Length: 242
Length: 124
Image 1: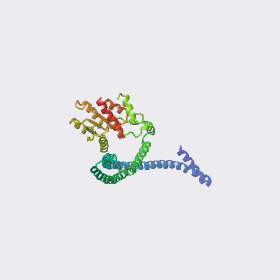
Image 2: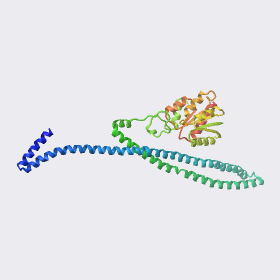
Image 3: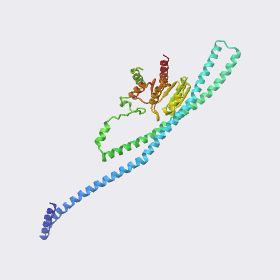
């Protein structure tokens, strides 16, 4: 079809040239090149699309390689750091608390011992020898309490400083969340290119049900198979006859 | 009274031990999962078991079932202190014969209340 049209146009072109009809020759020449050009445009279009797809595939490939080779191991290190840092902070805090508790107990114990003697003095039931002991006890209690208050202050400052883990782990976790988001985006791109977006949308709407142990429930408000508080546990157990 | 505290996280064992000491229970030992805990229990002398559920190795629920299946240990009081909060899990623990169930995070008051309740019942 195109060939016969081409032939027709070529014959007309020769005819116009022989008759010195420049205007007609230009018109048939344009007809001939138009057919060539439209084929060329289709081919160039195809090539461009292929090139574009190859490029975006290539980008996706390197992004996925980076994620697998760098980002995910890096995220594991970061999360390990979170475990270590929170454990360290918990231990530092408990060290300080375990030192503080007996000190607080001793302050209370000393005060109640002194109070017994003091009441005796107030009721005028104290012998002079006992009073001298009371004075000594009072002095050492005041010394001890002063020292204990100082130590408690230091220990409480340690507890305060140990809470710095929240800032550090918060920053690290934020980076991991960003990485997880990148993985999600790469996966979605891959699904869009090679899989089915319908499957993806269906899966998105499904509620995931975990079997067996799963640790702390992080989305209690979205779940109806979990208890919300100790009161719920107690109610459930008493409904079972506990 | 000798108490065994089983949890895979040392910080949680330490918290529970501190709270128990405040309640007057100073004789406590620790294990990090059921596999470590069971032989300790079988070697005898423990009066009370406080266990987590989710642990590598043997989980708390299986430790409980093992305890109830052992003629020497079957009447040992068991308190579960765990983050597991699904209703079906609480029912499972109850059916396996748990004496008390505390969900993490918990308070010192809750621990005292549950322990008091367990011993109150045992005395009856």
